[in-house]
Every structure is written in C-alpha cells, then in structure tokens.
Length: 277
Length: 152
Image (tube, rainbow over all chains, first blue to last red; front, side, top):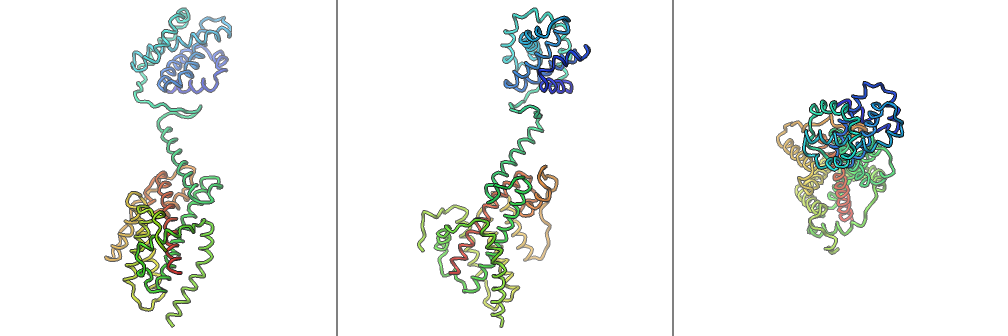
C-alpha cells in the first residue's frame, strides 16, 4: 500500500500542479502512476461518498496525464476538457475491479458505469495500457470489509490508531473543560499544565479545609460537651441545608483558611494549656 | 429553625453525607472520654473526625465511583491495620499512561491527590477528579454549616 499513499498525498496536496509534474516525470513512472491511481480509487471509494468526488478528481488528473502521453501532441487544454470523461472512465474501470473483488460497492459505482458508457473512444485511447497494471495490483490488496465514515481535514491521518488517538484526545479536552468550569478562576488560565496546576492547588486547598474543619469540629465538640446529642439529627440535617445560602468562593475560603488556621491553632493550644493547668 | 422541605432533597449526596457524618460524630462523642485531653489526644480525635468525614462522604457517594471505592477500601485497610497491627501493601500503581502534552509530574500530583488515582488512565482520572472536586466542595459546605450551628 505504500505507493498509493504517496500518490494520494502528492496529488491531493498539489492538485493543480500535477500536470507539470507529470510532464517532468519520465515515462516509466506512468505505469506506476496509473497503478497508484487505481489503488487510490479503491481506497477512496472505501471511505464513502463524501470522499468520492475528491478521489475521482485526483484520478482524473492522473488519467489525463496518461492520455496526454499516449496522444503525444495534445494540448493541455484538451486534457483539461477531457478530464470529466476520463474520470468516468477510471471510475468504471475501478468499478469493474470492485465488482470482481467485493460486490459491496457495486451500487455506488454502477451509476457511473452508465454515465461513462457513451465515451468509448476515450476508453479505447487509454484503456489498454491502463488496465493490466490495475488488474495485477488489485488481488494483492486485501478487501476492506469494515469501515467507518470519518470526516477528516486534509492531511489528517485516517488509520484506526490515529482515529482512536484523536477520539481520546477529544475526550480528554472535554473533561478538561468540565474541570475548568468546576474550578473557580480556572477559565482565564491558558495551557493544560497551568490548568492542572490550578486544579491540584484547588484540591489541596479543599482537603486542607476539610482537615481544618474537622479540627474546628473537634474543638466545638470538646468545648460544649456533646452538643449534637441535644438535637435530633433530622433537624440538624435540615438546618445544615437551611444555611446553605452562605456559599463561598474558593478565593475567600482559601484566604479564610490561611488566615485563620494559625490563630485557631494558637487558641486551641492555649485552651489546652488552660485545661492542663 | 424549622426544616424546610422544599430545600431538602432526601436522596442527594449532600443529605446522605450530612446524616452519615452526624451519626459518626454522635458515635465519636459517645466514645469520648471526659478526661482532660493532651494535644496528642486532640490530634487523634481530629484525625478520627476527618476519617469519619471521608468515610461518610465516600459511603454517601457509594461504590459507583472509583475514588469513593478507593477511600472506603483504604479506611477498611486502616481499621484492619489498627486492629491487627499488620502492614499490607497498597494497590498497584500505573506509571506509563501519562498523556503527551501534560506534564508527567503534574498528572502524578493529581494521581496522588485523587484517591485511587494511581491505577487510572488519564481520561477516567480527569472524570474522577471532577466528581471528587464536587464532593469535596459539598463536604466543606456541610461541615462548615455544622460548625457554625454548633458554635452559635
């Protein structure tokens, strides 16, 4: 599959300039070219309908160079005008091959067969030197059975590993977006590393807050002996929800925590000393 | 201080955490000795309260999430360790799956912070991190409210 890939890349990248490219190239490459074009037709047909127009255009460029070489003194404009017919021709030839190899694509390329049927003299021009190469290369290619329709931009890889990797990256960036929405003040930060730093800081601050609050709870519990048993737990549960209006931003809580923890520790130590003396 | 039923969602994680945590605090208070406490005892009680908060948070979330499973497992292991004095090694950790473009040190830091994060790939690690952050904010809110109510 190597030569078709190279051909596909070069032709899809430099579509208009491929005429001059074909003129520069010596003749023996021509067979290689047409072979690549045939393989390309098969490959791109597998990708589905959206890629079809692209593939036929590439192949037509390919094919027109062939006719030009065989006719010798033809003008470039002629090749240009013949582009459509020759494209149909190539699609018909590839359609025949496809019928041979796997009958799945028959319906798609059958309509093209009817279109290209009238242009028989073009077929006679360039058919004979084109087809044997294709026939020889087709059986070597494994028929692709399972395929998915993928919409890619130019130059993006389409093999399964890259697709899986792309899907994974999209998933990760989606999660990162969710996390950015979750962590306050994280929307302005640019760059994944900094966002991750921010997230780590936020989690650490939250864990420290839990620690600090447990210390505070301990202090409250020890100060008034078992205050919670006085309440039925349902009321307390409701009460905790009543006062959920006191929501806080993380910045405030961070400052609060950093500011008040040493004082509180001081107080705690002092009170314990008081108790001991 | 009448309960407002409109504000209470009986099955939310917040409600379940509040109930579980208050129950744990009650049982801690019952076990409390009224002897004058040294700083070491105070520190130990702080740790007990924090453990209770973590445990009730994790059990409120349930076993759907990987981080709550990890917290519950860790607490169980610690209890068993405290009872038997036996040391068990933790779960396996995964080092290879750091994503490209992310600093390896940063994802490692995240793995250390999120419980059970050592064995996750990056996608699920970020997912669990999001849920963990939500639960931590809930925990902080509820604990703060309990402190406010008890101290006034």
